[in-house]
Image (cartoon, rainbow, N blue to C red; front, top):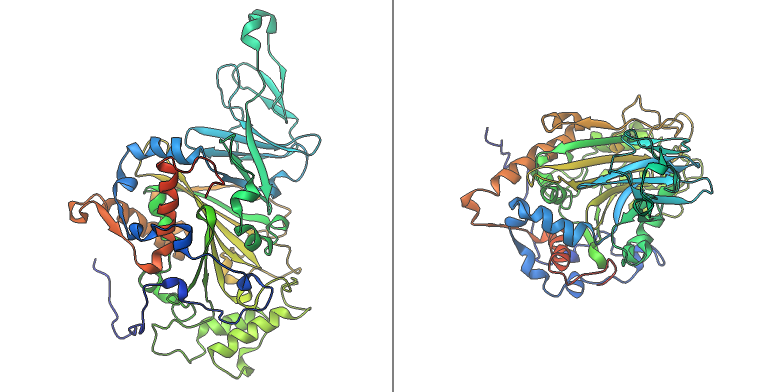
Length: 480
């Protein structure tokens, strides 16, 4: 079915510029805030960035890219494995999967966090098959009974005397480098990589304000995406698709004038104004239902409110600044824009955050180990401790029956490719479009390449950074 077009809804955007980085939503930042800090231009980070306005489709559809990316990318950089809330006490652990590797991340009896390969040193049997666990003393191989403690140390070999001594050298589980920053646990298979903090660089300052380490998981989904992992990631690195795929948001989201900031090592952020009517719409003065609901959520009666959308945006920000604000949060560390807008952060190579003081939507994109047309799309939602009886804002996408107290860790839910609608109307629409792009890239009508607008500058940065790894020019995770 052809898309329904509504030409009268949208206005042409005047004074378009090729330099999307110049579109600033906060021209007068508060001194000392994150928005006041010097930034590098994208061309300073990647002098050849203009070469990535077009990219060969082969990197998305060529089966050989699976092996190439594993050897040159996935085994060289830092990878998000999980949230610290799953490792609260000694004996807590979780499992992380990437390609053919399975990693156990655990807190041992001394309180230290370790990561090691989820493979018994006898014949490789997976020790942990569940997603996570609490209060474990160790792990036992279900095949032959070998045992390991929470630090990966081998503590029992059944019938040890039947093994020749030379076969029992190095029987502890193989360690995987593991570090924690901002409540996020990362692993790397690269023994020469610099520290995680060095890798995050300037992105660390952005993450710090959200205190993710004090949040906890309230939603955990793994979806079998019918596309390459990069095709899926691309969809969440641009707002260009909002005007067609998510038309319903234009009355409350500015989808064109977005601030982009770029950091070393492939990281970036897009500051997308919410509670700001899109420049594409003719009516930008009516207090529509999005603004009415936003006022209600912070305790303002819309019936007695005087003013339009801009006034409502400021009113919501001011309401959150009050010490007795509805959510019971301390908003003093945030800029005004953070109180209303979506700060969309990307940490290279494969995670994005829709960041708000009231919660974080983290999305992770993992490759399929054998099929270039498949990937794993993970969605996790973190929320802080809110005032008793208060729910997260509607934009966090937390169902009304979900426990948000942190007392219950939700089970991981698995959806198949045909279940895109179960992701919800917004993510479901994206998950429906992404496979169409994957299949279309194989068409001879594409002439072997795809193209990106300047509003898709973040995707261009991703490909420039990826190429540094794929070409071997970036050997260590911290080398610029």
